Image: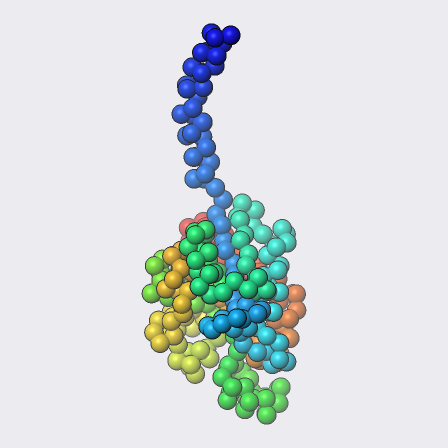
Amino acid sequence: MMANTQIFNFKAWIFLPFIIVFASSSAFSSEPTIMIVAGHVADPRNKPNTVGAKSYRGVDEYQFNDELLALFSESKNQIRGVNYHLLFATENVELRARSRLANTRLPTLYLEIHHDAARRIDREKATAAGVDSALWNPIQGFSVHYSTDSEEAILSRRFARLLGKTMAESGFIPNQYLANIVRMKIEDREIGLYNRVRPHGLYIFRAIKVPVVVLEAGNIAHPREETRLSEEYTRLKVVESINQAIIRYLSGE
Ligand SMILES: [Zn+2]
């Protein structure tokens, strides 16, 4: 009995280092995690949290963000070997808490989904001119945002560029309104790529310590674009563009 116990202990000591090495190597080779967050909250309790922009028909932006995000919970819309960590606006995680969550979980990428609008004066003029007016033309399209103020600015920019490319390749129109009218710093007009520096910086770009990118999937202030963005066909095309950008990013492009 005593002899058996000693043999067991002896063997356990031999195997222990191998067990530790095996356990830690599998931890290091774990799957990449993409944290995709729906912008804004459904129930803002305090500033700067809001429900987001208003669509042409008066729908709150956070609903568009959540409905797009929901598609990522279906396994057919997930890349195999990639973990998706989804955070919905209806979960009401406020801005600072979202950033803390990202800095605790340290995903490979943090992507926030938004839908853009336009200044009230431009919306009112275009509305008065009718849904088919050319005044709507400048108020449309997607845009991709990163910031050279981010800790992981180079990686953020790499993913933002790829996402701008895959969105443009899918036929989405890059937004010029933010550059021409709002005077945000645009880096590449062909792919709607913006660098969010002062005075157009965003809290998450400074707070989040992993690569961080914002996608404005389109413009919901534009009546026809709002209709398109409400259709599953368009949403799936956005989801596919995001997944293609993730694949290209993870492959080192
Ligand atoms: Zn937004």
